[in-house]
Image 1 (cartoon, helix red, strand yellow):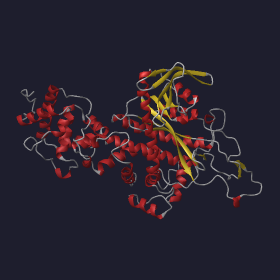
Image 2: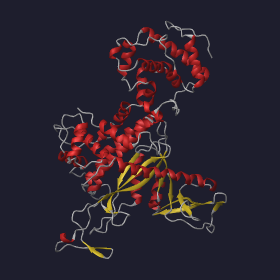
Image 3: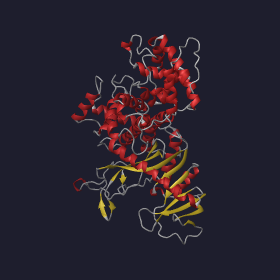
Image 4: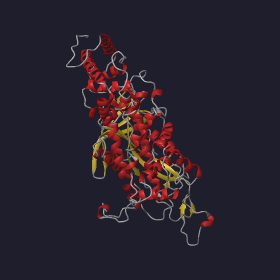
Length: 584
């Protein structure tokens, strides 16, 4: 591989020892970038110093590797900056400690490096390219790191905070309170504070002295908003415009207040999702079409919908609950309803999330409206089919979806019809297990795995019919029983076990809810739906930021993107608490 090297123009010759080092590294490694990282840049080859080195922000050797990479890749300074910024582990790998600006890259090359070093970089890059080509390790893609290549302890807090800061700018700054231009505090000051409240499990308005003082301490702002001002600003952010336009009457009816609050909050949320996904795509964290999961999570409240006996007034109308007369409170939030657990009530939110091998980003949030026993007028539920339809419409703004997984709570032909109309494959279990499957007509059965499938099954909803398969697999919960799954895909019996096995990926959305509730939701006393929905959506933004940050550092710590992200949420929120208060 060590052919004679003829320097071009004024390039100096590359020593035999360096050429041998390059050849051995190309034999050992499978990518040019790893060759650059491991190359011995001795004092004999390079000067080991900057011009005016006392003002240099970046280490000399790290800069050499950066420019070697640029010349080997044959990219310009603009493209180098884009790659360093978009592929975070490149600058971690080179030891830069951060991403230099394009102006800094240009200045260092022209003013900080000597002419001799610049010529030697170009000569060395030419040799690396030629030898690497002979070894067949030239590639346009960046390599994944091996477990023993980088110690996670080498990643500094500053590097992590840089990544978090970049991610923060793809979420919170999209929200707008629509306050006057001459307001004392800019919107970001309030959302810095709310981000802190979400991650620090503090009260809604930070009226407690402890949380207020801590926020003021970690913030470098000269002043921070007062708690009452903060709460008013949050309500204003989620409040819809006072005037209703004709566009609001999509189905000919006046939209309910909670629907208008939803629209007001989700618009900035989706702008943030799009920018986060841009970064995810740039770092190879998503391959479309994706698999998505849909589910619903409760957010309990602890104020009873019923009056205490001493508060009942003459003329109050009772409702009958479990055979007992109860008296509903007036002005109780309409979005609070009874939960599955007995005597529990609260808000519910539905979400749609990317699952599987891709970075699990939440793509959409929908409020859930259920009719409650204490309500004296009929308002109606949000059907599961409508929830799914709204969530899919939100998600389709951002990604192409191939499959959708739902739990048994979505076992309804209306849901199946909606997903089929969106031209996606669904996988939804039936509510009940089946003990015997031998007597089912048209059953195809595989004796080895004890799985079965009935194909070409019609699913009817209103005036539509689509066909699919009903699949039977041995239950892992009930001895001798079978779990039953439905899909609109024609599944051969030998593929049933593998296809249904993918359903385990749906548990990622359950872990998502646990993480959001444990680490990214504040303690909230307010029952105001503007506050509740906004704070939940901000919690989702924080969750997405956490997932993006882990993607940026996935290579350096070498763990999978799924259930064991490299930066635990508990650690992340402490870092984020500092990152979201950058000061003036």
